[in-house]
Image 1: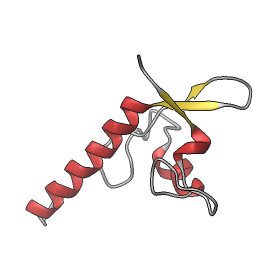
Image 2: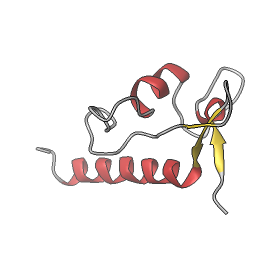
Image 3: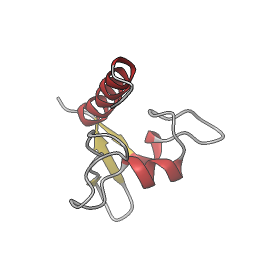
Image 4: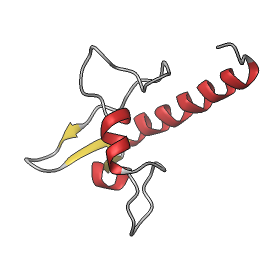
Length: 86
């Protein structure tokens, strides 16, 4: 069974931790997919997260896509560590 995370649980706030260690503005600006013209997290080749509209106000992301984002960022970090010129 595929699980999802509501978008408001994805980012951190002053009162709670989120699934990702980023604030709301950063998530919407850099992590969420807005256009096929810019599908990657800035500075990487890691694909942004696409939202699933659940209702007029509720949106979610599939957890396996969150995992892929985190793993992609890890690989990007490791590549930079092994090849500083990249």
